[in-house]
Image 1 (cartoon, rainbow, N blue to C red):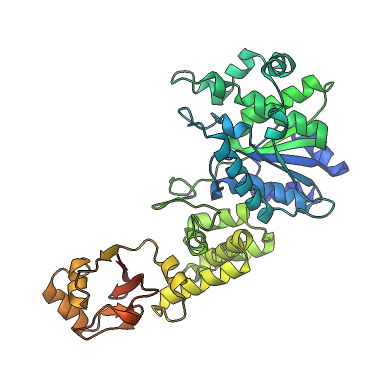
Image 2: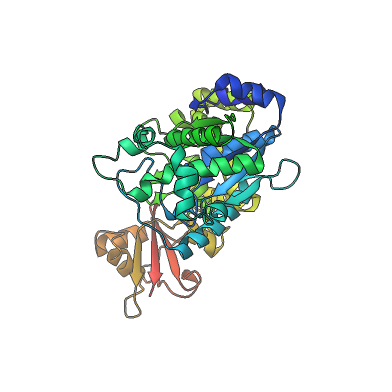
Length: 419
């Protein structure tokens, strides 16, 4: 099986419920498979990507993905991987999050053609079930002892788990059962923390559909070689929403992958072939300073999530910041590239003299040092060297009349804002 061999080479498969059975199934028919995301925020982050991209690999081999966004389960909260109860979201917030995430899903999957992805929301069926029906038609099939044996539940017994979160695994099992009956969905894919929920779904399908056979597969937890959490930076999570994480920041996250991590990320996240990745792996060993593997990773991921135009913009910003020449960038691109640099606000009554601002913004340690920095040509305003001690940050020095970028030395950047 070309698909399963590729997944094995990429080390994407963590657990399977029946390896032999799934190999036989994929060898004889095109199957529907699903993966779900709960809309706990109005955007996915890169921690959501691996199971979804794995499902897209199935799609590229002729199988149909069913992409579920949990409008119902998102109102409950999955206890998997959590040490304490989640905060409940309002119905309105969940509805908004569902629409936002579905838009992001359409960038990941092909939605046209014979194998086009099907977008579903579990509120459409769970929302129609009353309490009596839930208990009689579903609850009776899943024993309490069976649920208590699940790690996601047993790990919370000492610290406490509400009945609301306790029932989550049944709700997800109902999803699998519904999709099995409505879309002939025979495989669920999820992160490694979803094993308990997936196997509960298989149990429900078996009991409610005359011993029917379905399958489950989980994906390994993505970790960094140094043990720190994948997908997190000092400024927070790496979101797919460009308003939360700009395409430039997104590009830089992947470009800054370490040599120890980059080949694993290429296998996990990109659709580059084995021969290409093998060559990039060799380049990491022989020419690490060129960062060819990191560049390929950043380009593939930014293009996939944000498109070619956003990739080109991220590359322009990267090149301009590396060279120190900001003239080729728009003010919006400059603001994007310098989002996280130290910032100082200048009020209407404050001096705009370059020496005063260098001191007030703590760019230079004293007026004497500031004068030396300017006179020696160590200070740049929006990429241009300034040597006049009476230079004022006014007029064209203010980009969009909102901010100025000050550089001291080769790489120390600061943003001056006006308020």
